Length: 220
Image (cartoon, rainbow, N blue to C red; front, side, top):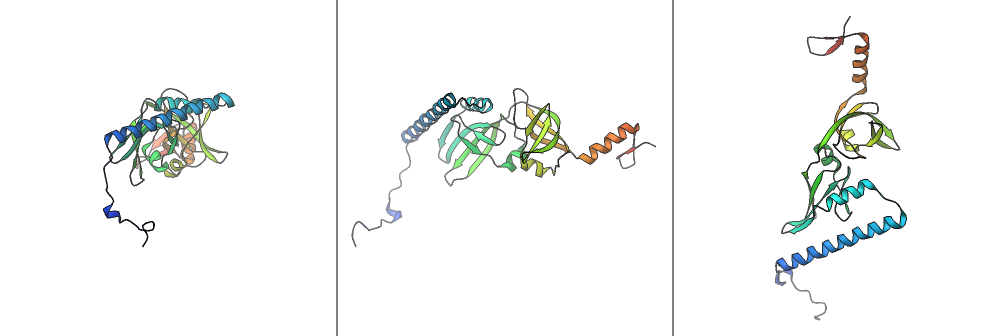
């Protein structure tokens, strides 16, 4: 058997743990790459004249956070943009829609992503942004669900619409950042269209009556 084709058993290959110096060197390389990517994004915007102020705001906030390496994997911190997490280098990481919906993540929330050695992505909300609520109407535009509120059409996650079994025409309460502009809203509650219409008719009809079961019924 030739030495070229010989296979060395994995069991005899020395397994040396990565030193702290190596981890620091990798971290420095990652930081340098992120800085270069950020500069490239800025140059591209300058050349094309196209910019996304909302995205730039998220990247700027993410730059105050960071990333690191641990024995269990890589840890990245960033900002939730309404659908994904954006890090300081402008890299996006897909956030599971079901998690974002059930956690009621709001655009601008600070998040932490741990990428394990097995390749698993584990997200955690670490810095919730101050939020406020507003009421709007659920519509469908360009194949996407949106909520008409405060004179704007705000996007919402399909997973949230499905979770609440909302339909076009329903009144929806959404969460928004307390300050600044937003393109996305997080659904907090849904008032079905038929219930809203019944309540409006009762109000126009002149008063309501509470039945024994606590339900509202029009006064006669």
